Image (cartoon, rainbow, N blue to C red):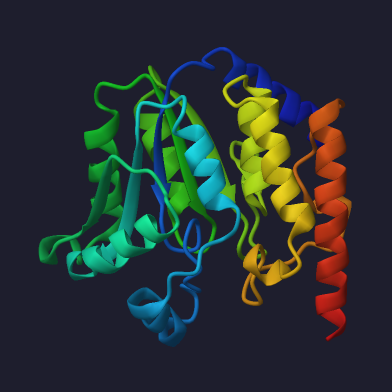
Length: 251
């Protein structure tokens, strides 16, 4: 059943595998923030420049074929300097950065909906990347439902163990985004292979799945990939992640 859902999902994506625009959340999507822990989130927001590796590599690969990447953060505008420093440090391409003004602080959802609408007005194909810590998925699907004339690809980072809906492409690592983009014929296999290699050669797996994030210990927790060379890469990546997560569970 899961394979069937994925194949239908890929089939729908294939209808509009052309130039798109990317809108990505920042905290717990690109940056390791730990939003669920207020104390750590504040500290990480102010001082940390750690990202989920190899997410910058995926965004650079996507930048070769999209019309621009927009970073959508719920952080206050006072943190613009810190965020730009992080993006520049990791060579993450972006056309614009959105952060909240004082008037936006009252309603995070309304702010995100407004910013997304401002970007997609003249776009037909939209790639939305977020996480399942707060309301990204709800917001993204609301936008999708409001604009049935547009085509959406929704990638949701599973940071917590909360369920991700069948209408989203669930991922644990940046490799899975790359695999999804390859399956809809936007990303080249050479890029997917290079991204997988980064994970397979990484010695410090907490750079990919930090201690605060949910860590999968079974193959059926991952989004199923169709047979072929991407699936073969996926098995290698998933096997390494499962081994790391099982070891972490024992510590």
